[in-house]
Image 1 (cartoon, rainbow, N blue to C red):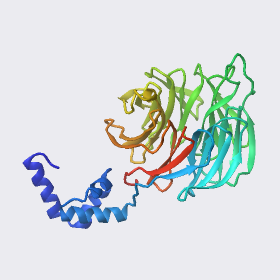
Image 2: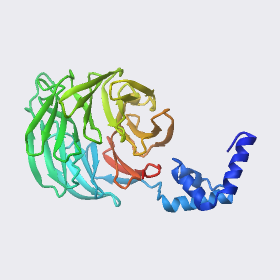
Image 3: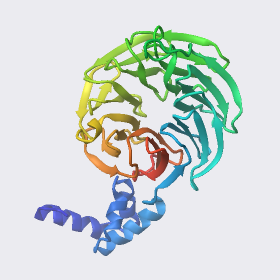
Image 4: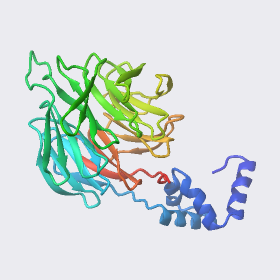
Length: 372
């Protein structure tokens, strides 16, 4: 409630002057409009406007659980038709019908951990990457189109196998994807592939495993995060390094481009989320998660379509919806019981999917207005 006489007077004027439909449009744009509606405001004008907002902007507090994996869910992706793809530590990939939480098919995809899945823009195919040193191209009906043998699966003195695919991301052109590697001698490499099997380019510069990858919406840049604590930005056109972002004090485990292509985010086991410009300039540092719980390390990030908010998931088992300008946390989601390692926005613009070490993926409403 307004805390000053002037503020109370302004709020009263707003509800008296604006008709319910116009006030409803104002509420529609507020991040927490549904919270306003849920407290059942005593002001009749505000109550009527909140009801109109609820009809225009569907929302539910219900969480849909996708249960069926027998080991940790390491990555999740969303197809334009609403299908959800999850990959787990048992080498299995599942395709789900999102609304009902029903598994449509299970794919015995890899020999070991599925570390990443990424949808191609055509909505009909996706790529997966694994610690078995392969990437694979699939159709949504479970057919394998191509296997990319990235490295050799062998262990030397307990070191990871050469060509361990630890991160994967698709380019918006629909025919290229990138993988981030660990294991000597491929340690720290980022490889750009064409879906026809061609290795287009290898980016080198990280000194240890690449733990996170993202591609800007226009496809101009690749963003990589590594266990060497660094974030790097690469030009797709010139195949060159654009910038190195130095600031994290532990492994970088998450990166995400904001939709406007002006900024990007990184998250680390140092429990910080950082906001950067593409030239490597640091903008903000946020501590969002509980360091007392499993270190509070950040495991996944997603920039929201309004360019003002993002989702962050953590070892502390929570997901935070926060403002990228000031770090203010709008909502905290607590529907997982173990670390949350992956996030994906759903194409309806209203919901997101998350995957966890609790062996489930879950679908929830984020509460923001869909971006027009």
